[in-house]
Image (cartoon, rainbow, N blue to C red; front, side, top):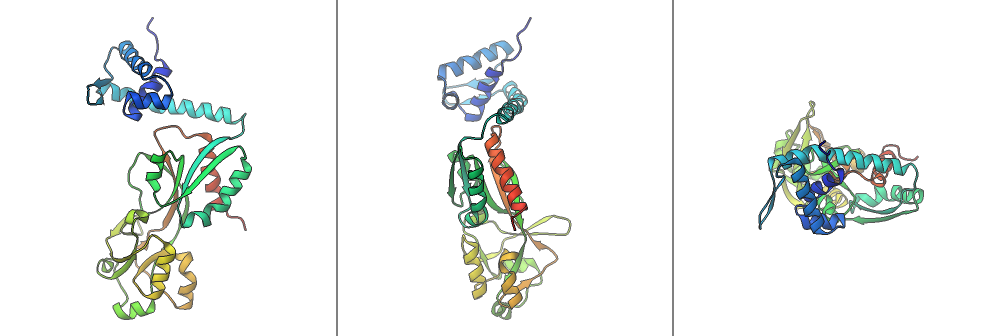
Length: 303
């Protein structure tokens, strides 16, 4: 009778694919490289197919290897997730949890929630950094990164969970309107002076959403670039340029006449606060608990 697939062997094989080499997989699995190599070789022998092409320069999946990886990876992640969830019912969440949040909005929006989460799970060892690196921080062994984005996220190897949405609007100082006139089309911002970002939001162009939910991208004339919503707000008040800002942040100066809200058929795309994590592994229970906690706290703020 032919033996069935060995789940440990499949896990090792998937680790080799994920990490890109036998050495990196061995390091991640804390086992000798020779054991990793032998396990994959035995798996190939049992299946009677070559899974990985080995040369002195690279390792490349064969079509059979790609098929095995594509089918087995989700199953392994599901089993690991099930195991973790079953164990979490019996033990307190504990161990290291590494988080990255936006340097400007993060502390104000998430500071109290993260402190409450730490009090609820005192055995967790929470490390939280604040910067604008976003996706890049996940490459530095961060468990979850909270980023600010506008419009659709680019396709990537990460999973995104929405946490909160902040409606935005286009504003300008009355003096700027008097000088340049009131724009009637979003395409006019391609030539009008605008306040944009340096690297925040990936330096993205302005985005608008029509009634059907379709995004329209406008490459605005960004002659004043800042990585701070507060600086963009102050520059808009001073008449430096047209700005796309959180409606909540600029509602009072709009009411007072210090800023003019400019309305178009297309709405300014909202800012979104999103939690991202790697999709190349199952989601640990402590990471899931944090994301659920933040999502609930942001959607149901305390009075």
